Image 1 (tube, helix red, strand yellow):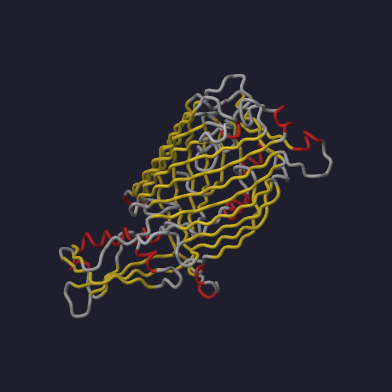
Image 2 (cartoon, rainbow, N blue to C red):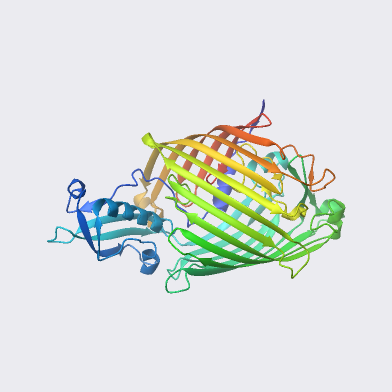
Length: 504
């Protein structure tokens, strides 16, 4: 068995810093069914009908009340059986928490003085830190192992710069983002998202602009590993930066949130990519079949998402349905005519004794058979990755993938730094640890001919692939999920990997 040891502190630090997202949460709650009752004992209420007289929200200094009440399903002046009300309140707690605006959400049921049946429900929220200026310093490659082994730890493959995120702008859960990035990939970005435009808080929109330029690009995939060409290999080392590719992208997004759990999204995209003519000598199909050096298209995407998970970043209960249809090329430009459909289903089930099981299925299909190299999809990026295949990019027009994890919570604690931390939003440090075993498997179908310069001598497409192993997940606040995993893949390669974010 080929053993690859892939462990470095950089693999933990850089991805966590670069992907820091103040809107994400952490699952460390030990008893999601807990509800505090004031002035009564729970045992005396099990069969009682209660009249909800009032709903209060406390702790929201910046966030507008209507942004919170948008997530609350229970209604004032309505009677509820206690058992039903308790479950509805816990669901509302989760929905408020999943807005990403609060460090914690806690509800109390309080009896009105002098009444046997009249109650009020109070939601206590603790707001997050919303202003995030940050320094960018990260690897340009998909993961640390890809950089270390496939790119020989090249020192010119770092990205650095400055990023600014303002969450909860105007207290309305709006987000403003700006970025200036240099190094391996020079990129400038601006985006603004408004989740609610109308009185009923169902319609929202966002817009973004991005411009990037590269002096090094991947141009083919040999044995499921990408090969790169840089400006120096084309023009020689003259000491000046030579741009060989640039991309301009703009997006206009419309959201319709029909219910608490269902969201419909329409995205209109304009994209323009140009390359130097010299790139075509390495792959004439980089942007199209006829050796194009410029690719323009207008694209349209539709996304349906039903999210019934208890927590967004590391769910333990519930399910997720995510369906997407994308059409690149609407007839305005004739540079590309390509489409794809993707479906993602995930299910999370708590078991006894702090055990959990999680499983997901992802299916993807695209058309036509021929696709330019720069738009060919597959497994190997973001969460479309099988554990144990961190070194590989498995391209294809179609794929199906299933991931399953069986895990046990080892501990879930919350440290309070007190006065040692002057910013109260960071005083509470929740940490949870989960031991897991997993089995991932997939099939990627690549219909390109043997003579294609896009995928050459593929090892992993058009065959059943799998991996299995064990690992440890560390979960904490502000989007920090770190996975330590040992896996064995279908090539009989064993390796120890460190990744960030949830593996399902």
